[in-house]
Image (tube, rainbow, N blue to C red; front, side, top):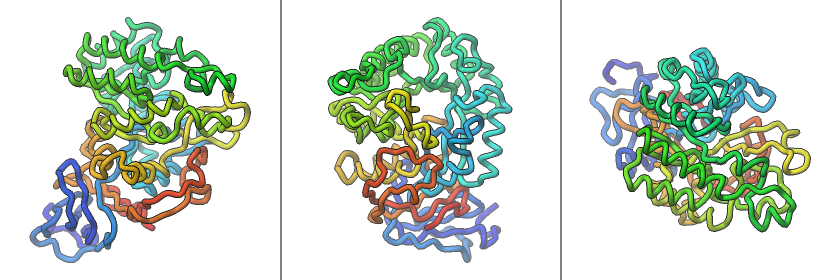
Amino acid sequence: MSPAKTNATDRIIIHGGRVIDPANRIDDRVDVFIANGRIVAVGTVPDGFGPAKKIDATGCIVCPGLVDLCARVREPGQEHKATIASESIAAATGGITTLCCPPDTDPVVETPADIELIRLRAETSGKTRIVTLGALTRGLGGEQLSEMAALKHAGCVGVSNAMHPLVNTLVQRRALEYAATFDLTVFLYANDHALSANGCAHEGKVATRMGMQGIPEAAETAAVARDLALIEQTGIRAHFCRLTTGRAVHMVARAQFDGLPITADVAIPYLYLTEIDVSDFDSNCHVIPPLRTTEDRQRLRDALQGGILKALCSDHQPHEPDAKLGPFPSTEPGISGLDTLLPLGLRLVEENAIELGDLIHRLTAGPAAILGLPAGTLSIDAPADVCIFNPELAWQLEPGSMKSHGHNTPFMNWQLKGRVTHTLLAGHVVHSL
């Protein structure tokens, strides 16, 4: 349907903002025109557009809706921690219009029915899109391959065994080969489970002084080396999830240079926190993989800026309060991150760790390309998923300001800048200040 034939109520003009769309190399003060839930023009008003609702974005940045590569919405199976409804609201408030859910729910995402359940509940919520990764092996048990053909047909955007180990490298090779048959991206968590064992902190001076079992750098680098060898052998398209060490990033960069079809991402807490932050036994800093060294943090920042790491994600893991009580090693790992993804990213810009356009690319077009989704762009006829934020609006992260059901974050009480004023999903305003 052309814009001239649409109802005025279907039309939106976003006026007066600075539009940043890295996928189309746009960084300019222009208007964005939306009709029937899609982008119809950027800059020049289309013929016959007529009356429309106007959103004043003066002083704000207009960009594609954010795409989060990893967010555990805890449903189905762990609704006491969070629900799709609660986390969808948190996502919309943070300007995130697409979430990718790993397969380690309960039950595991390994059938078309599991995928359909999550899709329908997200649709009912109406606040954000949720796409899913399917299980690489049945029940994530690491032995028998899943029905990948059925998973792809049902709409999963890739396959993964999440943080669960595979029995051996032969099973992994067969799984990669089978995924390649269906042109599925395999999402890999680089972790040698024998080396990481029951560790809870980075193996180093801090963990030794605190008497905590450490997880060595080699738990990640050994796994990356193994995975790279199998990727080269099978020719599979693969993505490394949440790298934490500078050496692993260097190995991935070398493999990318050599032409392997691989990508990688980093979770934003690892760009701020280090092993030093666990020295007071703050369970909100208990994450797996663990927080690494100051040098690793800097090398991760450099790799994000340089494009080796194609995406920045929240690695959202909401917990109920009891999950973070008790001795540090016995608490459940993970940080609630949807509320802070964008403002912490903007803080990187303020610290000159990354350019604003590059940050937006790592939060939009970069992850969308990894997932193979038509998102993260303001291209003509693309879904009108839009984030409008005021980069100068200061606020403090407090329990009352968080929309996620999980308040487990080490960034509580931080002074942040950057607040989303409007989030549009398929042309519908799903959040406004």
